[in-house]
Length: 474
Ligand SMILES: *Cc1c(COP(=O)(O)O)cnc(C)c1O
Image 1 (cartoon, protein in one colour):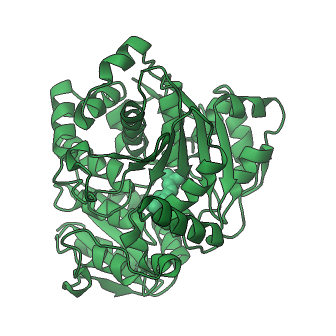
Image 2 (spheres, rainbow, N blue to C red):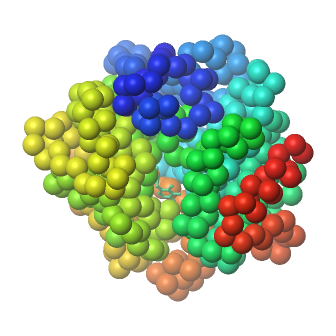
């Protein structure tokens, strides 16, 4: 399998070649040159696979330059009951991504049983093992530099801790994360994980990462890399659980199901789109946004207008003004016309809007996409209702997906709502909704009292560079 850029001006590459990089050299995102097609017969033969077998079946279509025995070993090491252990009573950790049925035709796909209690662990844990494998082959190393307001940074750190050849430098805003989130990240004592608390806000952290990455000489000399949501390895690993959930709910292979996906950078639902393009019988992909509704506006009108500012909400991991994976989807919408994507993104890159409300919009609908918005009050009400009706506590992001999902529920079509985090991560919002604290998974009850290891720095690019230089050889 070769990978091509959405902007059409970069040479095609293999899976391992694009694994450690970010954008293609022409500024685009990599996608497979064509989507592998899964026939009904092949699909039926996967029906009773466990998660590891399914992950191998899907990923071996994409990672064709990894010998099958190696890929199997990497997958078998990643998707274990020990890693995805934060199951609720009644769930089997061996399922890795268990499906909970609330009532006939209404399901939650539990994706947050990994170490950081969010769905990002599903792909990030695999990425950690893939990075170690790819770096070892060439005796290389990488310094991952990132900025986080919570979820991504901790998922990256728990995936990369102790990995040979990998060091992580993660910037987070000093005093802006919840005590739980801080404890999750800062209590890691692994020597290859470096937490830098920046005396500023998340945007300051992100600006520092951009400034360092734009210093091409520094970037090359210190092998600076990223693990952000455009990473193809992450997207490909997320395709697997759409298949997993499908088999868990259908009676017969061939039936259609719909998915509701709490969305921010469009990585998760983009994986659903690819599963559908591969032949998984998906009827609707329901995109849920919070108050940051740039994606909802697109799916309703065909106009995509990046916002000048992000609103801070109680589903913070969906607070985005521009969806970084959206270009992948639009590449398919415009019939894989790279010149058209270049034309459109010459605007998006300057934060200008684009209009695809004409002929292209039919394609968007043909791909099964619909959308809706969920506000703070909806979120609170949904958390309360789901708790009351089904005795299930869901987090704020999952609640956004659930609320919008129900708006598009159809009789006879199973609706699968993706759970993207556990409520324990967002205690304050749960207290507001339910007047009680969420339960914490075993072992995390006293995480705030563990010793923390964090370096506090000013909003100063040079200071961060000095820190990286001083620790890049450790
Ligand atoms: C990252 C994240 C999302 C958004 O996922 P995208 O792939 O960026 O669309 C939703 N919910 C939670 C809890 C997240 O951490």
